[in-house]
Image (cartoon, rainbow, N blue to C red; front, side, top):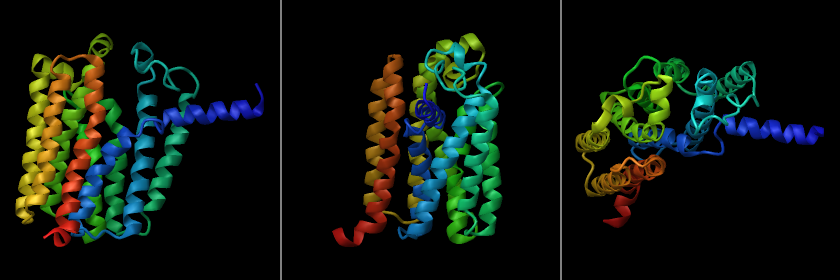
Length: 295
């Protein structure tokens, strides 16, 4: 194998380790962060701030994936969907994976240097959440709730970057994101339920058992209800509510995908959550940026 071939193979392994070939995780992190930026700035976020948070989201999601694969290196070879991941397959060493995670985290940290100092403190918490999440699958009955905090921590960070403080509405939006994460990651966990039972991993799909579909739909309802109340508090009108309504229709579509618990349909529902988050963001943009043009 030539040097060029080895380099291409190494870059391909890093790409898969960082999940750059699977952007859905980055999007699920990005949408709630964009919600927060638009709410905090009344629809007028500085372009630089949007780029900082978008790139930071990509870097931290990539770092989280690397840490996850390092933590699950003894479990992934026994799961059909994950057995070919770079660390599990031996293409990237555990030590190399930790070094990559450290570089990605450092780069994300450098991005927030120009922002409010209190964002740095929140960033430390965000790094801890991302690094510790993979281990919660050993002992938390619903690790998806912890994931929701980790995936939604861009919300208080965005408010802190804009306002210099984190108001109660930001924490309410974070709670909404926790329930959304339980919904979409339970759909994801339904794909691996049999493998997870064999190796002793805890997931919401296992914990909810035969009530998994009902739990997923309940979490969607709670997510939308909290976001509706946030909108009422901020005096948002019909356009925002239409965005929530569209997200609700998407959630109903997910019910028809997951009701028979077929693996590929559950995975399709998980990936389709990109449109759930996008619908809510579209409602915010319509309410805060387009309303004065339409009416």
